Amino acid sequence: MNLLPYEKFVIKTEMSSESVYQKIKESMTSSKESEEKIFRGKLQKDQFKITPYYFLFYNGYLPVLIGKINRNGLGSKILITIRPDLIQVSSFMLIFSFLLAGFAFQLAENIKYGKIFNEAESLMMYLGFFIVFYILSMISYMPNILKYKKLMQEALEAEETIQIGLFEKSS
Image: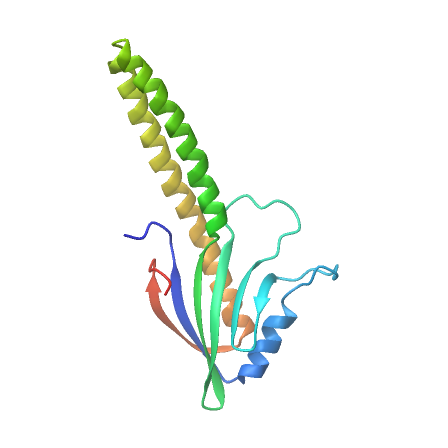
């Protein structure tokens, strides 16, 4: 079961793989540049791993775009997977795990003294809050996936986009 939204798609373009590389490179920033760019990350001749560039704090999960550039006749075929940044999601899960552990210790202490019923309701509320917060944060992440998918389609002058999977695990 995969709990994180992934989207995989293939962009077919008439641009050569070198042109695709240059287009992505133009949209990236280095630490010495001060002008506004769209992405930052790692770029090689045939693959990339980029994330949106935000100078200030961003309130939400940043998408990570992982791509592989392949020649396709005179043009190119780019396989792209968009997923949330795993460090951000892991941090979120770690914080909630510590809160749950603290609550579990408190629950164990109250069981010891026979006050279980009020604490069981609190535990259910905590788990309910976690589930609702998770669902809302993933729903609010979906527009980011669509935004950066469209941005890549426009930047790479896509003649065709083939949907491989929505909410599927990256391989």
